Length: 371
Image 1 (tube, rainbow, N blue to C red):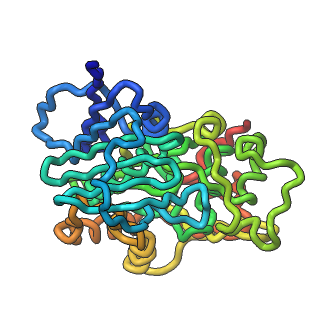
Image 2: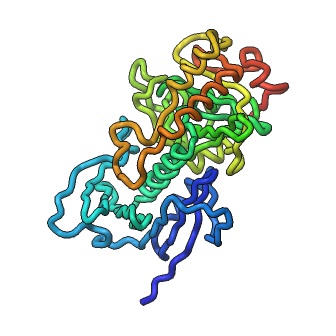
Image 3: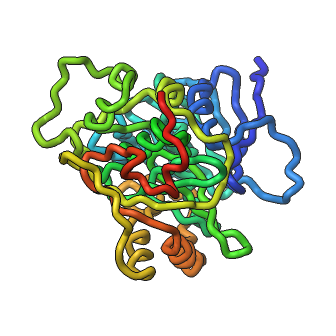
C-alpha cells in the first residue's frame, strides 16, 4: 500500500525545518500551537540557498516503529523536567550506529536522530503533540543561538509596531504584567515566556516572540474575568498560604481559549523594543513603578542575568543533533544586551495592577482600553 506524504516547511526568522508528514501522523494540534510564531506552508524550492536545520519525517504511529534494536541498553532522561507534572517529559534514550533513539515514556512518541543525514524520524503516540512541539522548539532555539540570536527570559507585549519587554526570574510577575498591558492598554501577547532578540546589520536590536504554553499562578489567573474557567479552577479553590504569587502551584492554561481571551500579535513580527519592565510583584496595597536606577553597564548586567539558552540546564543534552556554536557569537550577544541597556526601563513592585496613574506614559499611551 502506498503511503501519501505531505511536504511542509516551518520557518522562524531564518531558521527552516522541513517536514515530510505521512497521512495519519497526528501533528495537527502541534502545528496549531506553533502557528502563533512559526509559519508553515507547502514546501517549495528555496531560492535563498538556506539549508534546513533538519528534515523531520513524521510517520503515522506504530508501536514497533522507530524502536532501537532488541536488547539495546537504554538510559532514563528527560526532554523536559519541571516543577509541574504537566510539563515534565520523561524518556528513554539509546545510541546505536551513531543514531540516537528516544522514546517518551508518557506517550510512546519516538524520535530517531541521524546527524549525518540531517534527518529526524518521528512518530507520535496518543497525546504526543507536545513532544513534537518540544522537539521543534529545541531545534529552532538552538539554531537561532548558533546564528547569533539572544534568548531573554521575558514576556513581551506588542502594540503599534513596538514591544515592551517584561523580564525577570521565575515568579517575578512577568505574566501578570503582560496581561495587565493586554487587558487595559491595548497590547497583544507577543511572547509569554521567552523573547528572541536579533541584532540587525545597522546595529539596532529587534524582538521576536516565541510559542509557549501559558503557565500562570493563581494570583494572576484570579485577576481576569473568564481566566479561572479557562484554567479549570473552581470557585472553591484556595491557594496554599503564601503562594498566590509564587511559582508553586501554577496552572497550565489551554492555549487556544487563552488566545481568544488575550489576543496574540501578528505572526512573524520582529520589532524594536520601546521599554523594559523589571517586575518583582507580590502582596501589597499599591503597585509602584519606578525608573530603573544605576549605570547603563549595570542595566546590561541585569539583562544578561536573564539571558537563557536551550544549550544550558540539566536536560539540555537530551539529544545531540546540534552542536553548541554560541561561542562564535559571544560579542554579538554582548552587544545585544548593551544596546537594550539604553532602552527606558522601570522596576515594578506590589500586586502588579497597572492603571493610567502608575504606568509610564511611554508604555500606557493616551488611553486605557476597557474590556
